[in-house]
Image (cartoon, rainbow, N blue to C red; front, side, top):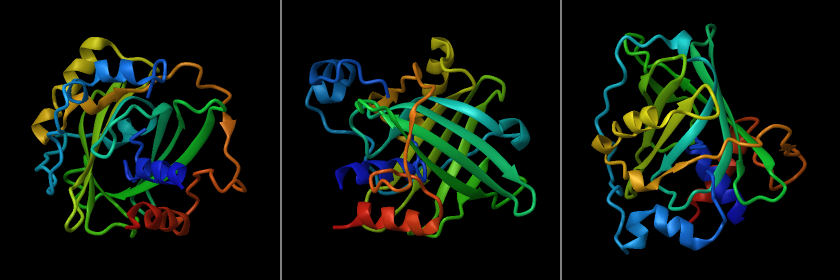
Length: 246
């Protein structure tokens, strides 16, 4: 059950996620050094009820954003440890229904079998004069779940943020730092990370995602009850029930 809950939370990331980390050594000490808030016993500063006001990227070219991306860093307001590795996303746009789909995959960093999990998210564009703002089409959410492309150069890097509100709960916020290649230069990473604190994102909880040895991963089986493969809304709703169960 805990395994299913973790997988479902990722889809709320951006479904989501993903939002799709390299956990070196797997022990508590390296992570405590990495995360200054936990090391100093301080509480998180990013737990808020309302989503921030966001302005998506201007003059956004949707077609250039499509295709394959590696998620090289990942943040989620529900995550306090680096959990994932080999997180990848593929964006596509369907002209018939005007929907954007992201197919994503990842593994749990500590999984010795390195089993690949898969899912998908679908968005609509509410206002085509602002094509960098997307709204999720799945009906499993309470309220509106917004996604924003904050910045991208299309050829090398991108930054995407998701936010959803739920009554009487803190809002769910996640961010994906994207790269066309498995790695991204430190200067670019720092440039993109600096855009996030204005949205009350605590960078101490934005983790690197290991993209090494990610080929030929074990595929999840649809017959395996622990395999998280979202093939339709029915499955997504079942996962949503699990993670919201009181």
